[in-house]
Each structure stands twice: as C-alpha cells, then as structure tokens.
Amino acid sequence: GENVEQHPSTLSVQEGDSAVIKCTYSDSASNYFPWYKQELGKRPQLIIDIRSNVGEKKDQRIAVTLNKTAKHFSLHITETQPEDSAVYFCAANERGAGGTSYGKLTFGQGTILTVHP
Amino acid sequence: KAGVTQTPRYLIKTRGQQVTLSCSPISGHRSVSWYQQTPGQGLQFLFEYFSETQRNKGNFPGRFSGRQFSNSRSEMNVSTLELGDSALYLCASSPGTSSYNEQFFGPGTRLTVL
Image (cartoon, rainbow over all chains, first blue to last red):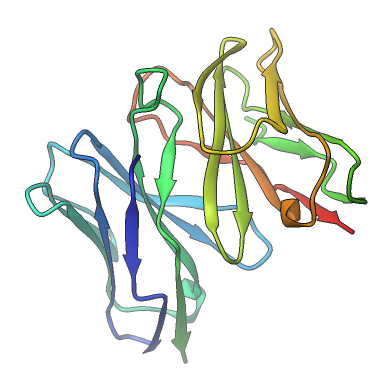
C-alpha cells in the first residue's frame, strides 16, 4: 500500500520567517496530494492541494510543489504568523482494493509548526 | 451548507464492549470516509462508503465495520473493544465522484476505552 513520509516532525520559526515541510510518497499511481491544517482540538481543514499534472500551486502565502519523478511534494509557508501554528498533514490518494482511489487518503505523520511572535 | 457532523462527540467504554459512531455528511455528498487518529499512528484510513457500498477498506481488523444509509449518513461499529482502540475517530465527506474531490472532515468522536 501507499506510504507517506513527512519531515520534519516539529518545526519552530520566528514570525515572518518561511516554513517548509516535505513529504515523499511510494505509490506512483497517486495523483492527488492535499495538505491539511489541524489546530488543537479542531478538525483537519484543507489548506491547499495539488494534482499530479501540476508542478506548483500558490494561494497567497501558501504554496505546494510536486516532483512526480522523485515522488516528493512540499508545503511552503511564507511570512509566517502566530496563527499559522498548528499541526500540518500531507496526504496522497491511494488506489484501494475496490479499484478506485476515491475517498482514500494516506497521511503523513504530521508536522507541529510553532511560530514565535 | 451545514458541515459534517458526528455523534456522539465523546464516549467512554470498557474493554469487551462495542460502540457505534455516527457521521452525517454535507448535503449532496455521497462518499463518507472514516479515519482513526492517534498520537502514535497519526491518521489512518479505515474504510470508505459510497452510495451504501463499501468501496475501499484499510488495514484494520474485522472488529471495525461500517455501513451507509440511503441518505448517505454513515455509521461505524467497533466490537470487542480493546485499550488500543482509544482514539479520535474522524469521518470525512466528499462528492465521491473524482479522485480530486476534497474531503471535508467532521469534528470527530473521542473514544476512550478503559
């Protein structure tokens, strides 16, 4: 099955700095890579996603890059703010026994991001 | 649109008991996926239902089962509870018609097994 590795497990930055989180995946059939942010006691929420036919996607201070050949993708947050502090999860879809990858995500272990004012 | 809801929010059970959790998806969404979240294992996929059929299944023992109703609401059941089943159980809904569909998560059910 799919395996998603995420690094680092913790990341501490000063407000205004950039933060980068990296993930690798194993299933070459994966074609959808979402990133979720989970604040303490809250549900995971999608912050950005990328499809396999795209190399980079940006949304204001957040960007994601994908290297299909190397099977890795990264989240970049610029001009970090204290409210960016949360746990971030990368994920990849995986084709299951049912023959589809719909609704089945494999998640990385998460990165605890702390932004110090 | 109302978001994904889960009931109950908290549950305390003892070993050997069984439990049923409920998830109501966003209106119009036909896919419901279930995940187990623990500090040690992170978020792990349990199964996914679409139009009342289990379409995908993760690597969990048969004690974990689920079903989906005609209104797309889904339940998951865990029988013969073990201490290691203590976790946050999250469901997520999506249209279920594309591998690119965003999954919207519910608030989760916190299960504690004593």
